[in-house]
Structures are given as C-alpha cells and as structure tokens.
Image (cartoon, rainbow, N blue to C red; front, side, top):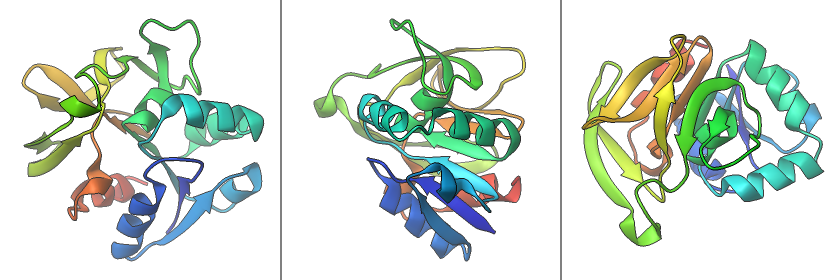
Length: 184
C-alpha cells in the first residue's frame, strides 16, 4: 500500500517512519501531484494555522478535500483540526470534511502537555501523547467515537475519515496506524 503523509510542517517524519515500519510505502505530500497513486493519507500533528497557510499557498485545499472525500484519511492533533467542519471560536475551517466541532489547545499551553494511556477502538493500553492538544467537543450522528479520555472525546471515525487529538506517531506503538490502514 502507498500511504501519503502531508509533509508541510509538524510531525510528518514520525508518521512516515510508522508507516514504513508496518511494511508500507510512505510518501511525502507537498503538492497536488504527490497525491497521485496514494491509497491513504495522514495529516500529522504540528501547527494547524501554519499548515493551513501553506495548504492555501500551495493550492492544496481542494485536492486534499477531494482526496479525503474518497479515500482513507487520518488526522492527528493538528490534522484533526484540519479535517474538522467546525473549529470553535473561528469563523472558517481548513478542509471541513469531518462533521465534528473541535477546540484548539483545549488542555492548555505547551507546558500542560501530558502522556496518558487508554483504549482506542479495540486497542487497549494505548499510549496517548497530548501536546497542546485540541479536544473534540461534539460529533454528528454520522461520526463514531472510538476513543475517550475520561469524558473527553479524543478519537473519532466517520466512514473513511479518522481523527485523534493525540500523537500516535510520538510512540513506538504502531497499532493505530495499522488499524487505520487495515480499513484503507
């Protein structure tokens, strides 16, 4: 399988390595032509505002939207913000393909980053790394919640779209990447 990782800013290298460790071909995505031939796409954690500006500058918004509408796409942390239809406190969105409302930096600043453990789908004892993490405040009826931390929604799935507010790429555990790619 050929998996692309949006490689504009953020933790894209870690996702590329995770995909390769699972035995798949991983490609950097920086332009529309890089989307050709991909079977799945990962939007990494990083700085969503910076990524959004680069997406616009590189004329990637519509190609990414089209890809996400038709093929397996997963957003982690900032990537989840890129996918969200509603970003709380903002009047616009980036790709707007996943029917969730998300709040940036919901757990606080960089100093409030933390590591936990939880269940994601059928993955038990999964390491959860939160860095200036957003929080999914609400989901539509078409969105399945696949992970919570206490009462907080931290992972969702809707058809081919997956999003989590933590950083699975920041650990050696590739089970979430494998689960996502099994559905690709």
